[in-house]
Length: 600
Image (cartoon, rainbow, N blue to C red; front, side):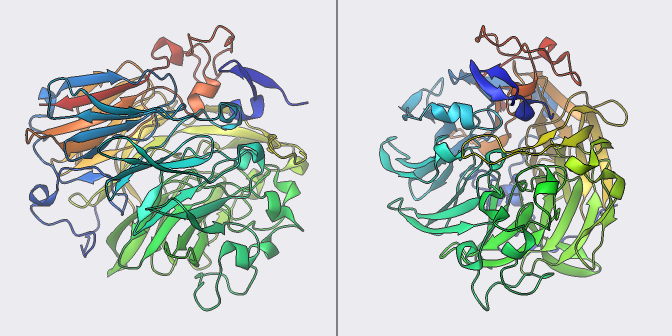
């Protein structure tokens, strides 16, 4: 029998609730940051990661370490929605665009007028059955702007395009099936004339995919599955060249018979694009079910990065971060593209901070692993072998029904980091990473697949990691593996990061602080209590008045809304006890939905 708790007044499976010295950089186009970065930055924020490379770096430099203490809130807006506000606003021209969690309302604000009045508001119909299907709160990770359109996903499996000037719906396309456990909280990416979208739902045994839609019409042009036969994964002879594996039907042959049909590998995170190589990069989630005894094999291409051509979706290469994933280590985190000097040679790289606790540096043209270092405490593996590309496992941390209750695995299935995207500064050559510091026990159990029902098979309680602090915001050198500095936080750091040419790094905390740090030293220069826990990502933009601003959402949620009792005052049916590993979180925050703007 599946135990449940009440969330939004609905029964949610309890298994979903608990669980619960730098290196030189050679800059080349299209990611070149000139010496006068601020002069070249247009001050806009038109896509989730700021640029195709997902650097979350702003070249604006009016706000600096010298004047950051003079920051103050200059505007705020209640979205009218209580729920996890992940994602980030967009700023295009003189308009700011905001998308809420379910019911996925879109707002457009006029930044030229006093009080930033509303230009338009779009309120779509979103099937409420998606609420009970969404794994980890009813979040939305944001919109993207392209060719006069605001494009984003609704939770119930629809992608919409709006006229950026008027809010008029231009097209709406059903891409996913809620009845099968598919939902669409991820932020789309537009590459050329393709809108790239993916599905969540690994906890329901979906078969993960990405789709390429035509930007102008919304028509689905191609669908590429992440697991299964070559023809459905869009593997084409002569063009698919993974660095470490050879042969055909690599995915099918790494699963038990028909296991791939409900094999997970969803796409609910972030996407990047290299225009020069014409490749879109994205990570896939864990294989299903979580009980690894039911799926012997490497389970390709779950917990992997895949590189596809956006035009026809053809798969060019793939690399698996955690073969035969035993710990729910999704790999849907961002893929940051830059050029780094590795072993004395400048390489076009992709840097990925995986849930499994390792930071991976790959050649983004070939998928060759160049470096891999732990960025948080890790004990499930002793390291990553660069020759084979595979982790060196600690056999005592392997899980499954046959292993019983395996104790003290670090990190937890929340990961060394999870959805919270890192930032990269080409000026400091450092990555700014929001991290979690927790460990877990893991007990696998046999589970049967039923379409639209949880397909998990594990109980995984958490507890604080070494030192007692459950999170930290760190500056990390991906080539050397050196943690340059860290700011310890009492709770997991679940917000995204922002780096700027003013020498600053920005982030938010789960207990409701917006913070600004010196990007070189980690000294906290400014903080402000924003009223609700921060799980969204800060952005920086130039306003119509020519001044630099920083915007961020406040709205406690995501996984933490599911496991933290007493933070949902609007639902009298929610009488859940607090999570044992952070029982006092409700003393510091509760649900919210606020957009904040800070300036000098």
